[in-house]
Length: 71
Image (tube, rainbow, N blue to C red; front, side, top):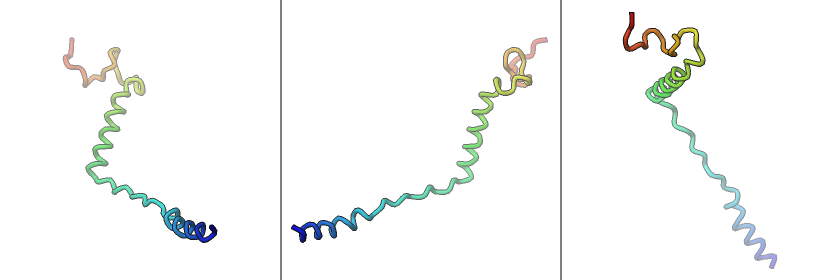
């Protein structure tokens, strides 16, 4: 019985000691960084009406965003 336990321990121990290899993330390319920055800027611009109300008119648009200028 003890021989069986010793054999099982010697057989299982190396397998239990192995850890999974964590693959490092590949470095972000310049193109991916630019895309992420543009997406972040677009999100911030979309949320800007509540964040910066002082540069908007009553409709929530900036002066250069108006499609037609009414005089």
